[in-house]
Length: 473
Image (cartoon, rainbow, N blue to C red; front, side):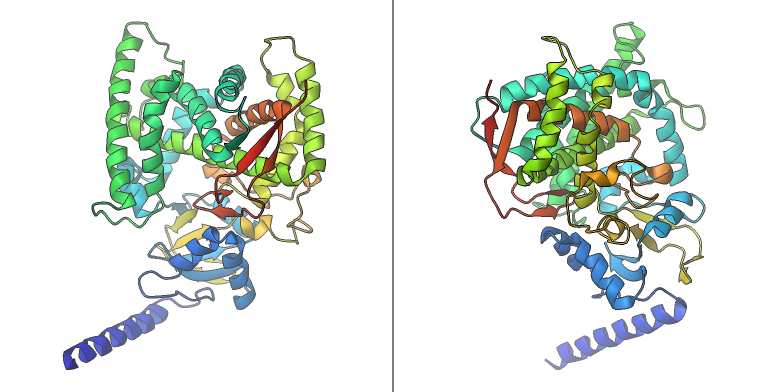
């Protein structure tokens, strides 16, 4: 007993001394608290999202410390949270000067090539690998592809159903589109074999990296190894097909990646390409499916908004000949629908913010930011702030008419060099889906008090079960 008491006292003294050393070492830090030893405030940050009030973690501390900049500890890292448009502009504009992108340990271990090169090199490689994919000519071809996939998707997964759970269905649609755009895989059965391990992998990216049997992290590592092995096989086969002129070097993202060399003029390794394809599948499928599910939930609660979207979409549907696919001009007419999508992303942003790492000591907003500390920008700090969006909890698509929100206040896709490179791709994918669901149905939510939570994206807690109401012929 005496030994345990001495051990406890020693531990407390060690923590106290570490606290004193920490505060003496770093002068003029932002106000705030570091939370519990080791875990910091990670549990409070995560639980606020799971409770459906992610903004509370941010605004409670802004109010408590009377500062748009505060310190905390998240994901086992000393962190400075920076809030507001000026902070967003600073972080987005100073990539590779004061900050670099930072990934948690779980991401680095599940996708190991993310830690093998610098953030600057990664950004340059990404710009080399994706330009053809993002060119207007390529996006034009994706519209008809997305439309065809959406028609088959609604015929098999929605029509004839009285009730559906929306989130699994939106994930199926966006994953089908991603597999076609990135890998030219369009057989639903083949796509389905990727879906299960992919879900397991994605679930582990935001967990504590405890590599023990039965943990989500261990399952995610196993799933990533399986997917990487299968993708490397596809990559090898694609190389042969290109050499034999059985595949085009420009037919999809994979073919383009195989034609790109690194900063030393060497081809990208197969493992590296496989990891990048996995990362693109995550970015191109998870976020868009969550956004679509939230849009449908908001529309179920706002019949006057739904009515205006229906009017816009039916005008487009009635202008099409039988069997005619959607085209670029059709999507350009979906202005109100896209305003609705933007307002949904304002209230339920696909990302609550991302991390950067200070690569040098610097000052921001009068405070010292030490090298090695992490910085987190918050979409909620502007999206839910009445200074930038009056009556911020009201769903109002007219906010996006005319010039729209002030710069750096609406940031669902981030900004700067790290702005989501597939932003326009996501816009097309979202609009095509909304066209098909709205011209077929209205719907009613089955769980009236279902919250939108963050885990790690904004999504209805139960996946949004809904009763479908087909339009009368």
